Image (cartoon, rainbow, N blue to C red; front, side, top):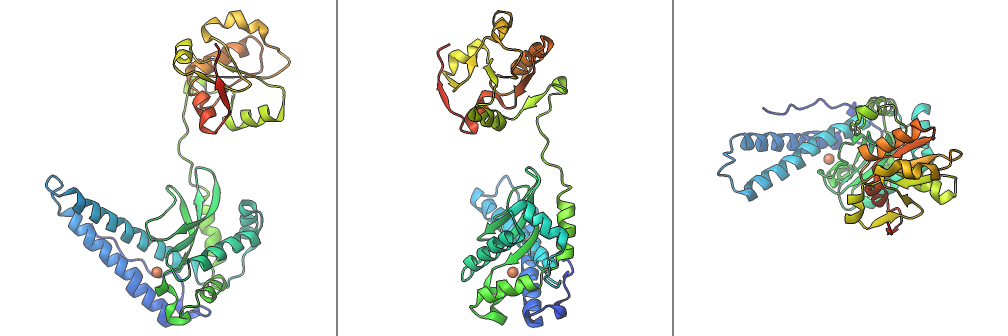
Length: 318
Ligand SMILES: [Fe+2]
């Protein structure tokens, strides 16, 4: 099924410092060219017999499909990024301040990335990452580099075809002109829509739905700060005989023998327990501790999570 061309978003005749000739050439030859390539590749892929197609042929076609597909998507966003007065609206200034420290810091980084790509080629995009609920300025030296799962909301085309007709080699002036033409209202609307995209589904342990948990990063920070916290590793004994390390500052206790060691804990300080990966052993132990009156939580992602964030470990003696 062919991809369909999208109408240009900006009014090319209204842009400041970007000629009609440049925008028309860009839309017709580069955006249109990518769309035509994409459809030709798609048609070829649809006619392939995958059982007899050599891997290198398929690799090549799929690589070129990705390049052409991303090129069409990024060009549509580029033209949709233009057409405004270039004056940032208050809501977006606040949003960018929240994510980058200040509007000026965001602009300085975005512009510097554009200057840095001058003479080469690529894209600078502002991307919303649903996983983390944050905005980043993304670098791309070619069409197919993109943040996985990210939603790009502003795009600056740094391929020479985007500016050479008007600016020659003066890519810096082109970047400054881009800022004068940003459609901030449209950007704010794209941000609002992007920020509603749900993060990837977290691990759901319905049976422990109400059980309080704590992130591994928070446990590490609390231990480093010296805050009172009783952290107990309750990996099953057979895990301990296989994995010889334990988080520094943490005690291992056999989850099968909770009755023997529960009396050693203080009810005055919170307790964090965890097993290997954050599943049932740590959760069950936290449940038992809470039933016994302790302020107990289980640590999300367990011992593996601790190591994955670079938490210090030592040889286990248990
Ligand atoms: Fe382009």
